[in-house]
Image (cartoon, rainbow, N blue to C red):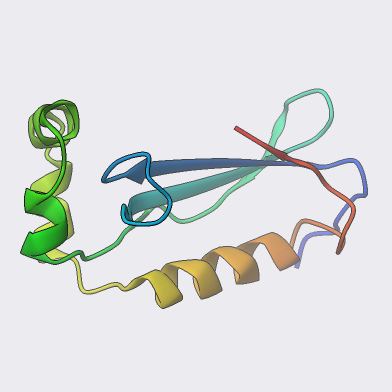
Length: 107
């Protein structure tokens, strides 16, 4: 286990099905931890989350186009990971590098 620092920064990148937090879902999550000088300390797993065809078909034109061109929609359809797995895995990664209630989230 690497030592954590109160000064480390959490960088979280999420690809979403849209911007409405009530109805849209996370499609992909990636996490990086840096020191205050932005030197990468650790890169977490990139997790593609399975979503139903109903969620994918409800995306607006911009998201449909962007996520189709990047290949993300096909990856989402093939993924066996759910949101709970992504959350648990990300938290476990962060616990190795971040002191509880100390580091700000960036991104």
